[in-house]
Length: 173
Image (cartoon, rainbow, N blue to C red; front, side, top):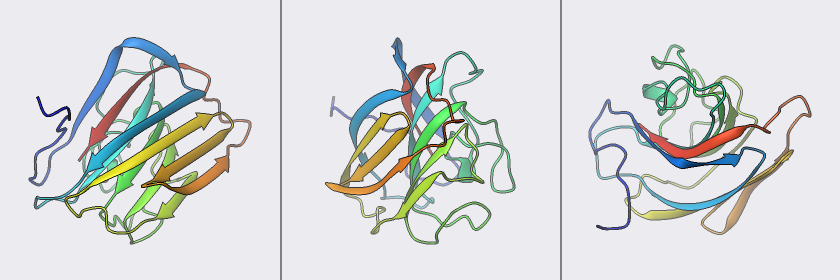
């Protein structure tokens, strides 16, 4: 009724996801804008926009903890990786995997948290305010914008294939 979706509540140790499954998009050509609200709770907040490869998927929910619902089973989480790619907004420093101790936005492929293909430190996102994110994928180019500022534009290695049928959704932890 409020025109928004809550993926996890404001308490620790939660993980969730929501995907649009009534249509399939091409993973190599996605432009999506959305607003994210992090805060008001006791947990370490983070979320992802995930483009899920429908040919390789087995679930809609990846690892918990630092996996934020898309990443795979490593020291700071438990669970599978979601195949495809994810743009995360993360407010907690997981020294095992995070590229920076600051709040950050990062781009990952196949839930592999050990290799952010692009990232940027950002101002405090766990501020109980809405932030506008725009993700533009026109492979091999990846661009992410936060609150009107382009955080990064990167060109993926040609061996990284984003041309797959996909569901687009969100995960959070």
